[in-house]
Length: 104
Image (cartoon, rainbow, N blue to C red; front, side, top):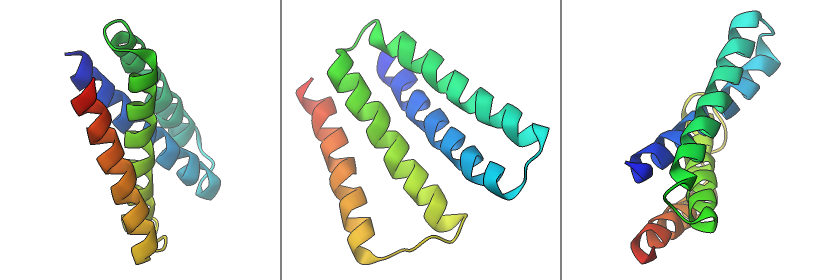
């Protein structure tokens, strides 16, 4: 359950980052509420995960998931660059995240 919570935390973080980007485009209260909910849920799930997982591993995986999905959201929803180098480094982060799961 702790790993599931950690994955949810990373996804909520990516959602929060997407809402930061959206807030730059449309400043309204709905976006602010979604931003706060995204990061709030992320921190709650991360806090739960830290009860059962080592802090270094959990933090690395949480930020890795946030980076990968945040970048993918930027590429597919906000039209950011899809350069092959960018995709390569996202794959490296993803492989490192999976590696941390396998060794812990």
